[in-house]
Amino acid sequence: MNIFVVNSGSSSIKYQLFRWPAEQPVCSGLVERIGSEQATIRHKVFDPQAPEGNPPTEQFHTLPLPDHEVGLREVVRLLTEQPGGVIQDPGEIAVVGHRVVHGGEVFAATALITEEVKAEIKRLFVLVPLHNPANYLGIEVAERLFIHAQQVAVFDTAFHQTMPEYAYRYALPTALYEEQRLRKYGFHGTSHQFVAAQAATYLSQPDARLITIHLGNGCSMAAVRGGRSLDTTMGFGPLGGLVMGTRSGDIDPSVLLHLQGQLGYSAEQVSTLLNKQSGMLGLAGSNDMRDIGQALAVGDARATLAYDLYCYRIRQYIGAYTATLNGLDAIVFTAGVGENDAMVRARVCQDMEFFGLQLDEVKNQERAPGLRDLSGPDSKVRILVIPTSEELEIARQCAQLLANE
Ligand code: ADP
Image (cartoon, rainbow, N blue to C red):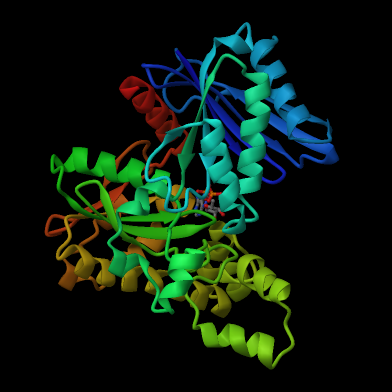
């Protein structure tokens, strides 16, 4: 069976095709700058016979793509035509798994897409005006192009629907929750679920108390016990919690009141400031940890402060979530920064003996694919690096859903 995973953004489409039940990635790609004359498609085909780590065969095209429909049609052409084709006909795709950012309180699990489910996703547009409409568009286009496939929605918020009410509510008037659904939802659920499941298997401890630390462009942490999320750092939207590439993370709401009330910022300007100009970019002038790491190595003061602040916030949440979980069996680093940046891991684990964390610095510096255990001999808590794959988790959820149908 072929499972096709689609992550449709406002001007991009990320995709990956898997053969099931082998969980074998066949090809993946990224369409960018949809809506422009100079849109691009990067299409990669994996050779199942090649040894692990071998680069895939890659094609790169620049072309005009007025909208998502034309973009996805081009992807279908790449999937079906040589060179780079992996199927004969779109009818060979049995399932299309869609990443949907917001499932609100309605979707605590993956759902087969029906007209009712689509209407519900639409109703959630007000909560995430930047994301759900783009995801919805991807669904509609895929329904037209893969007419024989079952369409499935996998929600970024669903995994966190297990949080207890005292963790997800804000201390605001009750009516704002009951009438406007103002509460913590949390995001990156697919990634937290994926690495938490692998960590529990590795530890042979289904009930493991885990803190999963997703550090990509967006960053979040989750407290997970027995495969259930008990708390997470992002909230109503993806701005809360950790310092990110360009997002501020936690901030006293008084700052926003001051910006708007005294400094003349409009709501839109505040949004741009918090989403696009803050975080590591605001502190150190770059949102790429590789640049900041280089600046740090030559003693740049702004980079040093940015690194300290970034890691300090993670350490604080390790403390907080150890309390949430009443103990700790492992912490898991994942995503671009978590998987690659040894310095971040070292700073996070430094002076954390009280929490039972002791990092093996030699293992921390080694590079290897797959799960890595970086715990030192005296570490009471395991320190793991687990590469995330949101696409594979989406495909797994699709397969599971259909098996249970
Ligand atoms: P996304 O959240 O978009 O999925 P990723 O998980 O791919 O992002 O993470 C992207 C970030 O990972 C980049 O902005 C960069 O800061 C960081 N990154 C990638 N490779 C490295 C590396 N070798 N060292 C440090 N940071 C890295």
